[in-house]
Amino acid sequence: MNTKLRILAMIGAIWMIPVACADIVVIVNPNNPVNLSSEEIKNIFLGKSKYFPDGKPALPIQLKEGSQGYETFAEHVLQKNDNQLRAYWSRLVFTGRSTPPKEIESEAEVVDLVAHNPNLIGYVSQNVVQNAKVREIKP
Image 1 (cartoon, rainbow, N blue to C red):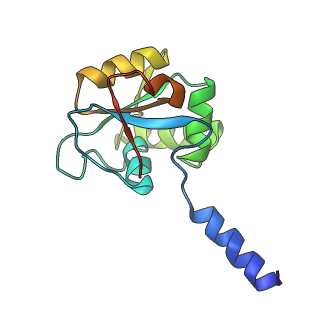
Image 2: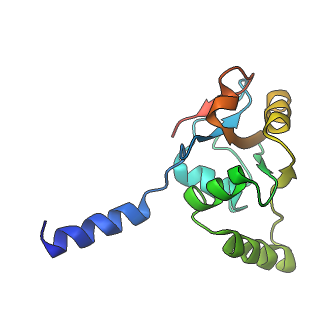
């Protein structure tokens, strides 16, 4: 492969935002018919968008900072490491522009909350979703 093609391939890989990564999946309430792109998911979890495409409020919840799922989601979906994400939210909170998603202690609790509220959006390990009463979003 020549150098120009390698560079183009690397640039293309940088812009891809994988959502189903390392067995982490984004979930919504089964009564929420929304389909989201990877970019829309990223914007909701970074506080850039407060609404689903249908105009209903989007309330992201996340696993507790430091957990395996949190770090995987931050790195692969939000494309930020823990320190970058902490600095990002510090700026937004300090300026009053937004607040980070509410932290939830366990994946089981994330599933339970999302199953009972159509405005919530969260993420969990894929194996947790198999028998859960939530819907996986596949961008």
